[in-house]
Image 1 (cartoon, one colour):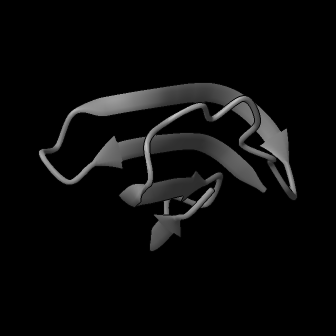
Image 2 (tube, rainbow, N blue to C red):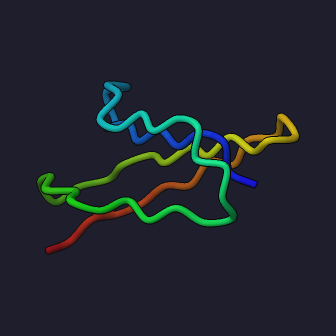
Amino acid sequence: QIENVMVYDLLGRVLINKTDIMDFEYLVSNMNYSNGTYIVKATLSNGQSKTQKVVLKQ
């Protein structure tokens, strides 16, 4: 299960920090940010974390 999701810009600034999700999926909505590259980090309930680069093009 996903416990926490954080979205960062490439300067390391935290744009989204959603905690206590406790679900198998999480949709990042209302992401009204500029086109660019972002880093999404999901922490799982077993302590593992997954990090993914996301390129936003609107």
